[in-house]
Image (cartoon, rainbow, N blue to C red; front, top):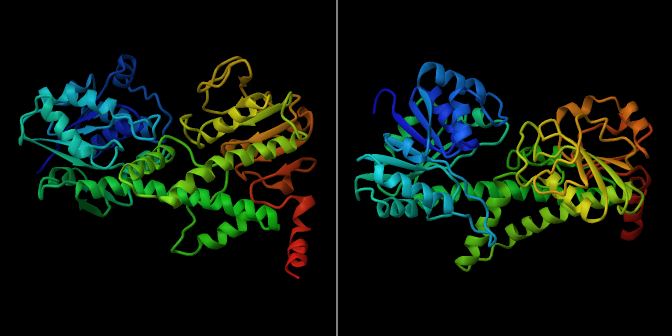
Length: 454
């Protein structure tokens, strides 16, 4: 295959829009389709609705060059050489991925799929889904043996999705028919990364196993952090020491309120559900999920203690609601999980996040509007609060005037659930991080250990 390829992308969310913009940047002609009328109209004008570094310039570049366009409805992207399916696969009540969006798209794309097309399953779906998509397309009217379905899992991190697409660690393509993966491999010919062509089941499993391992690292370091607090160690030093081992690495060894977002929780749950379905016990991964839930309870316990021992009637200032800094994504945010627990114990929460909706009485991601108020700046959230909790590590939180913050708080208590701040620079605060020794207890812990050992 030479020259630009005609590519259709179904879905204009984080994965779909990044895929479309980046493939257009690589020189291909891309039509990105979505069911949201306002989103399609806005994107056609170059208005990017999600916060993602570098994405808006790529969309503008693709539109200006005529290599990127947007269409309403999945059928608008079907008349292409290669069609990417980038549709939502949320977690169902039973832990399995919800495939309803995939079924709807297949029913729309199947009748208009051109002969010889390659359909790429980009969405994160359970092992076996690539074959399922093929069957759904055939049932919808796609001519048998005249199309190929392959798997090309995404490994994009929100906040760095463009960089991850154009400079990935690896490209994985799954195809059960030798040679049929070549058109998709060719799309990435100018991307400097190793390409792995695997069977469909193996390619699908790579995605789930990778995210499960990253979730394991997060839960592991949070367990280590709890032990560090008990023995007077500092988890920052411990994580730094073990992260220098090339067999371990430093990534995902930062303690906090647990993993969250649109991928790790869903993929861990889906992998556990798949294992249960085939009678395989994933004890380690089950413990990872349980630890993640406990970690949020640990953060709440820190806030409760800092507020004076009880949360009923307490006022809590919260900085950070998104699941990570640099994104406006609230899906499965650990910060929101902590806030929900605070509200359940009777606290009132005033929150600030640079990327979250603002306004008194605004309901955030299903939280009760009557007890959660989002503020326009970090200072207004602190007025009269019994404790300040930092739940998302936005860089701007490092540079606020903490003298002013201390004067606004009802009591100078600060719980840093992300270890974002330097306690030495917070004179006058009762500071508590995660996995860092508390002044009153840390000095005595090693002595207690020695006494117990003797």
